[in-house]
Length: 347
Ligand code: ACO
Image (cartoon, rainbow, N blue to C red):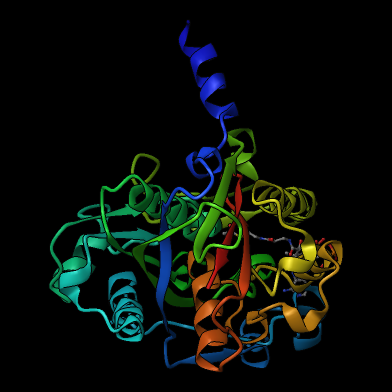
């Protein structure tokens, strides 16, 4: 069998748990703790309109954004990721000794290397291993997917999955088409190995679905960094093109997640989407038939925090008591690459 055929064959197979005999126990990645960190400094649309030709009404109407948090010099990707991870561990009643791996999703690392994740590892005092993952705004869903696979195969038992971003450092603050859209922050979850029956009724990560299409790499990118220039670069986006791809790819990804678990749309308690644009979020919620009260929305206060937006939204909904044991969360994300994906988690 040639490699291409073998790969196609692999891709068409069902997940291991779906093939498990009835009654057999399978390993599940249980969501044990959630935490977030936001920089203290808040910049309103009104304040931005004093330095760039924009207005509060334009930003709100087109995106739903009202303000964003902006990191101070000491609030680096590692600093914020560490704070979010500490909050997630505390929420789980876990200690750094329970962490076997740290996977940190970011497009704005402290340095090219070492990975920001190992800076977090040192700050927390964890053993095991740590690495960064780059998938832009889909980074958290990608990192969750990797962590889930590592737990299910028995490689690790406790994993910190972190999304941490300082997009304020890669903004062209003269470009009103992008600088109004992003904010800084970090979110984290702690996953612990548990067990289930391999059905959609299990607790934990039920499935993850990740995709990319590199042919669309030039509709959303950073025009600098290692190998391209001697400066970090600025984010460049063809917003209309990204928007056009977002709705149908995200809709497909959420359908894919439900179908993989034999669940109906009515099984979803909370949609926790990447917070890029309220119009995209509304379109996905409408497609799912979910009332707006079942969508976790932070874009009005956080703006787009890229890989941090989903875990930050989860942290907020957890802290205010909206998330309850047994509920089903549907995560969906899309970002530079183009990358996109979804995940279903039962709390
Ligand atoms: N304030 C005022 N006017 C503005 C601003 C602003 N901040 N930005 C653009 N405009 C103007 C433009 O110059 C243009 O003016 P013109 O008609 O005189 O030329 C007009 O507003 C319309 O601009 P468009 O770019 O066509 O506006 P659009 O309706 O497409 O909205 C937006 C732009 C909000 C960016 C939208 O395209 C969008 O949300 N796209 C998706 C972004 C996204 O999902 N990103 C996710 C991934 S992010 C990641 O992975 C890093």
